[in-house]
Length: 267
Image (cartoon, rainbow, N blue to C red; front, side):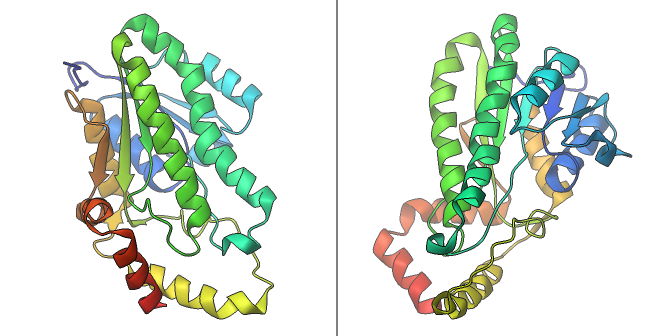
């Protein structure tokens, strides 16, 4: 049985993407629980006021930045891959450079961080990787690129969990649904120049906004993710919040035809 950490046995935790939203809130929650937090952002100056053991520059798309951050942080018990970006647009109109950046951050950034920090966890015979994914793992209109990146992250996490089990290292997927944060506001801009797609884009955007049920605050989401640091024998996937639990259940209970009909009728 893998054992979580606690205030009596605090973990040394590196969190990516701490300049705002869930990442920033995670630092506060984990720090208040007595853990040793290493907060990171592309520019550590953005971390002013974030309670943490250390503030470190980290760009998860840059190998040199990751190597420098891993050296500065030293061995950690827990890695929380929270850094992520999104872009909303019909896939036909999505610039390939934008698509590459989303995957470079959400998928390859996660893998780069794991490759940098897992050796010390394996050497210690204990460790945990928490990858922040999403409850929305179906092909919603406009969200195809983002969802594809999270499905790729999930597949990597499934394999990595099996590969690391013998070394005492857990891999967990935290799957939040809608969270009140700057994440949506910070999505990469994509101009849809094709007039044929404009009405669909507007309708799909309104539909996605209307899907939000029980919206979590960043602090609520962070609290649930922080619980995964302290949980004994964690499962692979953990929905974060009631809305995420509902969406996760629907992935298995609502078939493709029913899902498509519901989306197309709403559009």
